[in-house]
Length: 355
Image (cartoon, rainbow, N blue to C red; front, side, top):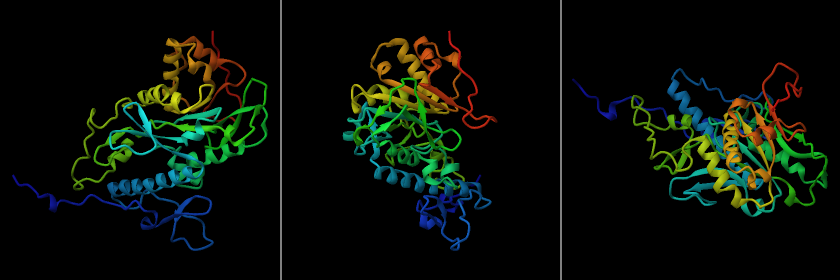
């Protein structure tokens, strides 16, 4: 039997997490395009199949995704949305030197003054603040593929009055923002910039924690981490040490944020508008179902203003709490769901029945 030395094994492909080194840049419409395209020619976008080496394609994709995540964070900071790090049932704006999970939120001093706050729970396969890389890396660019576009639309709420509207929700088809009329019949008064909705974006996708790098990863990003060689196994994920207490699953992450973070960073009379995307919708509905079943008259039940679900994965029969089911099924628009359909966009497909 013979053994090959590590220094004689095929190298694991590595790519720098730098737009310019990868041959890309962010153009004026906030699209990530190739730098080599001649002026006036059609933009060329990222192509996954760069070579015949599958591992090289994966690590290259992760490198440019890391660049994109950094660009999204920088652009969100420009509109007052910054990372908030959660560890040991505490939260802080400075990254702690201990296991933690990161979410995004309006700057805390400003968030405390917001009457309306939008809480987004994304699907469990996406990175923080990213709706879909298939949009972000192509024509839609950073605006349509991430929370940057949502924040740009929310800034339009800074007017004297927004009649009949108290929630902006994501459009399932193009990640745009559309007004969602509510039954209440009264205009939402926006008397100052402090009344523009705040935002809290949860992170149910990136929950695998690296002690070496002091940050969390999605499973896809973790598998793209550098290996000693191309034939080595991926870095093993320890079911205890590579997860943060209170954030081991998307459901636990949602519960921890709603129970130990949101009540302390928002005002007591806040109106919460919840957006759930795909299995993120299922996770937040499971939390609300359990919460309302045990504390139906608690603060959260009074603060919940509206719910928007984008391609939700839950089954209505899974919800056991009558109060939540009644809220979701009530006529008037305080809860709506958008799903993929062959019908024209915006057409009513079904009205939920309850009772």
